[in-house]
Image (cartoon, rainbow, N blue to C red; front, side, top):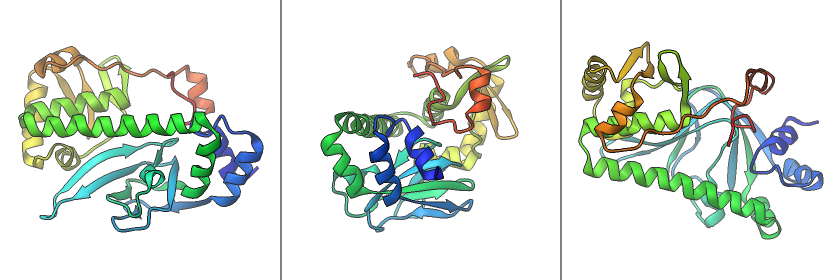
Length: 255
């Protein structure tokens, strides 16, 4: 069985398709490996395909007119991105960069649009994906507009905890390592400011920072500080499922 077939079949987005449809989708798609720091696409590229990340991690970001980066979101294995082409977007509007060596399946937009016409479950899944992604971006935008640097950073940490957090004896460990500059790019601040704020939060007992690893030691305290509810932390089904299914985004987490 071709690798593309396995990834498409095991993706939550396409799991409802029958073998014949999977085979047709596989034949039309292509797989490509992107080295760390390489671009999957950039603004003005043609939006004629959607992308399924099978390994690695990709970040989507904008660059402002004065050269500042604004990170929109991170894409994990099992997730699709570049989906706005399905709504008629002729050109990309953001950068997509491989944060580490990443493997991507490129699926022609017309093939997915054809399936959407006959597969209501696929249309529903894609609509839900777009809605949730836009909702997260809008929430972060509101945070950027109306909150202080400190509140923005806490909000971001809670958001990362919801997606990447895992309960450990020390607290909620974020399963993604980000530099202070990357955190700053996500909240519209500077690296120096983020460094100072993380130090303050650590002194207050809200978190620990260990070699770019952030552990939220008091999640309720952080949430109360910005009048938010603590996020629910996702848990692995069991250790056996984790060890036998190495692709995190492919049916590994409890919904």
